[in-house]
Length: 323
Image 1: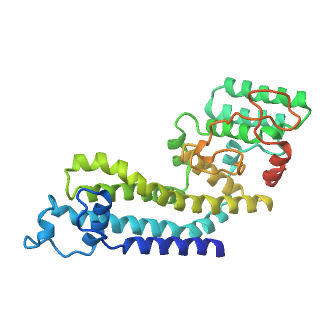
Image 2 (image 1 turned 60 degrees about the vertical axis):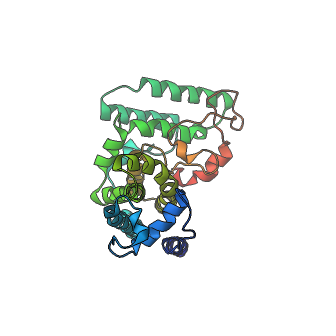
Image 3 (image 1 turned 90 degrees about the vertical axis):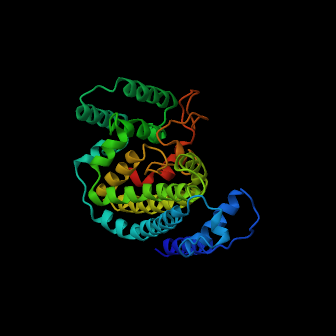
């Protein structure tokens, strides 16, 4: 919690400094930076007056209030999301879980047999035979047999392949529908941070341009601002939820947390989410379910589908799930 509070404090301080920025130059023409700086003046500006020469050049002064409200909402939703994280973690820790967890994880030791049981569970759930997935995993098993190593070397890849199938074709919709009410609210707040900043950018441009032009330009420019802010908030949430899940799993529990982590994995389409089986530094977390091809694992014969990390590395990073 001390680490969380430190990150939160730094984030609020950075936002406070940014929100109180002053206009640097008055003669900046059509400069984007001039537009952003002047926007902070609008936030604290009085009602539009026709006697003010500075405001006479504004094409749509009625949109100033929309921009002000959009910025306030964006700040509030971001702060609310961050404040909500410890409360969500406390709630998530109390969730007992159900047999649904069998859709997302191998039950028992990670062996070829238990992987096949996982596949059979998914096939029963969706009523279809996973021919392609069976063939892929059989090729993994053939490689490790020749190399005389454990199938655990492919733990991450097997997980990525089967987790997608755990939600079926409509992955995002299915994952969201399986979420608890609190998880749905938190997920929507996460998305709202990004969208609210985009909307604020559109409102800013709408002060001088038409709504159509503002939408097209605002979405592009807004991403430059929204992406880093949203990413920081998202990673804070993802990091603490994952850490709590791994901690509870090591204690021999965490079934409810496994399910919640799987739900968020599916709701984000398997991308922009570090799941329990993410291996730090060995695979881009933005690639999600995309299987990475790379160098060979330790003592494994040559093959295009071989793991990028060694067996010892896999054991170290995944030791919470040995049993």
